Amino acid sequence: MAVEGAVRPGTGAKRRVTHFQLALMSLYWVAIGYLWSSLGTLILPDIVQHLVGRAHKGTAISVLEAIGTVMAVVWQPMAGSISDRWQSPFGRRRPFIVAGTVGDVIFLAGLALSGSYWVLVIFYFLLQTASNTAQGPYQGLLPDVVPREQRGVASGYYGVANLIGILAGTVGAGFFLHQYGRAVAIASIAALLTVSMLATVLLVPDVARPTEAQFASPWHAFVHTFTLDLRRHRDFGWLMGSRLLILMGVLGLQSFAFFYFSDVFFPFDRKETTLATSVLLGLVVLVALIVTLPAAKLSDRIGRKKMIFGGGMLGAAATIAIVFSHFQLLPGSIVQPFAGALHVPWLAAQAVLFGFAIGVGFGSFLSVDWAFITDVIPPDEAGRFMGFSNIATAGSGIIARLSAGWLLDYFNAGPKILGLPGGYPVIFGLFATWMIAGSLLVLKVRERRQ
Image (cartoon, rainbow, N blue to C red; front, side):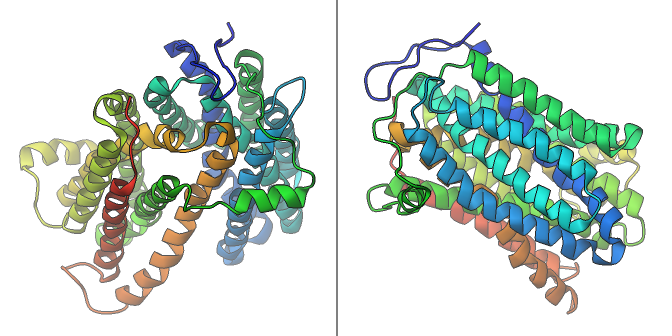
């Protein structure tokens, strides 16, 4: 059953859409999350280590990550911007979603068949190009369909779909990789992308018409996309700054959690370190998954800013608590059963439990992130602005790792701080500071309430 009721931006009210239709419109996000979580955490490291060996795998992965970041930052906003003005019998978003997904499938096959590292680099570059061709226009499709009063709930569905994709990519692709090998794991990505793309282009309407003529050339599209006047769109600028800082804190914590458990609780036990890290990050994702939809509905009543501010501050408080988790902070009646179930030391279990609070904060942020962006951007340029917002998403992890990595090594080489290797209080304090700054920055955004 197709979703009905989309109209040209600014020409009238859209019909309300059902929860089933919102879930249907969010399905492609599951595939996107599955694609990048499975590739980034499992499949690419496996391929790279096979092609270049253990001695150079870090540098090799860094090169791939840099390429991915550049493409996500540059090409996704351009693809979204071009789709805003695209004119075709099939709509302005669908052609890009189809072309990008077809490219994904082809270039995923190239990754699977790569016999050398530089062939892998070429296919990864092409995969990033194809994926971002689809993602920018896809993000612009939803504001074309969903009425403003339902965007909070729609944002919740987006958040849930993304988290489901991340979980499925880690668990599902991990199972395929372990049991059946790399080719089957990559084939599962291609299959999910294809199915979700077909559901999107066949069942979600794409009838909103562009309000301006198509770009005369790629250079025209580039100039238009990246000459964004933030004086006219200050709310969008403040919101992107807030988003960047909060994600820097969350992804920074995610990136260095393994090292923290290894150095603080399990110095020579990789198995226990992996277990504690997996449980911590799994709790963050699972709790965020549970929180996201209720928080999205709540945001429609109390406002978006309060949810982002509260989520960011809660995440910062839990991050600081992790720094002190080698002291007894929680009652033994709470921690001891958890420690027994995991078979880990009491204080390590306490550190893992703080993942609950981080998950609540992250879920509160995810629940309104998309909705708040759509509230402040011009409706007829949703592809451009939604693609532009990906700069904060793609750049946050890179900035966090580059900023914290050398600080960790530098201060770990010095005296202990708060009874820990000195780098962890420094970088975790930095992550908390970023979350607090992002929470405060969102207060500058003017909120349009229904």
